[in-house]
Image 1 (cartoon, one colour):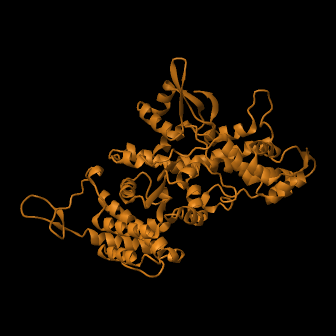
Image 2: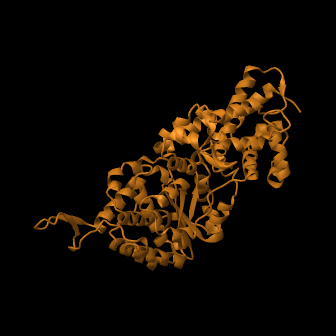
Image 3: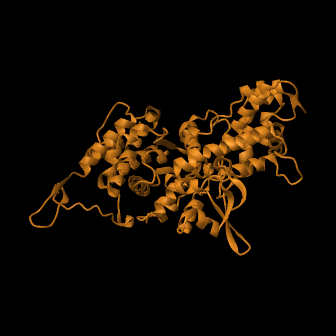
Length: 508
């Protein structure tokens, strides 16, 4: 069936695919895809959710904090509290100097107080839970007394994030007041607390650590409130990649502190659920200081977020046909989309051509799109797929408005898909390779204008004598893939980065 270019142009003008960034995505609830990670969180099987940038961590976070709290409260007796939600929140950056001065132990205390503040703001003080808290008066009083002993003040008004952070640092200063002492002789300066005990900055084994005494009492009191109300509390934390300077010492200390606080703070009634970039977790584990308690955290760690071909097709079809204009033009039944995988497949190919290029050996269009969005680790993120299609839609609209005569067999042409892919690749060069991995960019840019495949000799030419160490890092971030050919290893740069780096297909 053919469609006039004027009809296509008018329809494309009305299409809204939502946003590839979860925080601004208005279709997240309507077109949500329930992955295995979603089910694992819903049934409280996992607390740590790792995934690459754009894989859907923040989308999962938003589903639980924006759309599911009422369901969780009614069906599972779960209260959801959340923190660090706004992307790139400048309030955290205003406290950079204070964070720089915190030791590993003090970060455990910081996060403990912060988690208490979330419980206080989103549960104890929330009018939403007044009915549940009505019979827990003595337990709430005990909780407030525990907070008072911990120097955590009772603030009646709702607090902003800046208020919470001010509150947290003030409490932290009272928990561990220190002064510097210079004793007689050539001993040097050291710190003691107000009880005269030396303060050491050398981190002990995480196995030997416990929750700070005051936080332990507050946590026990909070659990008593929850038990009395027959509720559980989930404290959810996201956007950690935008809180501290990336790959800095302070970020490492902060993450170690958070994961330790998560382990100590969690119980049968209280869960701390963290959504974390997988490269941040890997960097934490492989850094010089490492993270010895990871085995305890990993017990409730989800598999890194990955999307199947069928899930990504469903994502696109649901979003495309959330638009009335396209649904009407192509005579699509939305109820059948939800019920039938075969029908979703048919709907996809009403919008897209069967293949992007002509020829008997060409892959179908869906596989072509996914292969162009796949990094060297085989990861395809929903964000990249949506970005490619959004740019293809914009380009097709421009083409049809520039030439309204004639008709097309499909809504999106091959030319527009190629354009969308090339624009995505250019974006990934700037927003991912350069922005996320500045410590590797000096090596990545040496490939610009080069070939797409390299053997070991070619990599020595490009990267120098320490090429193996650099290549291992480039493989870890998904820039290079390694495969065996004949008797030697060959390294390849994926389609995702090729146009953005002006690469020429072939062996260097």
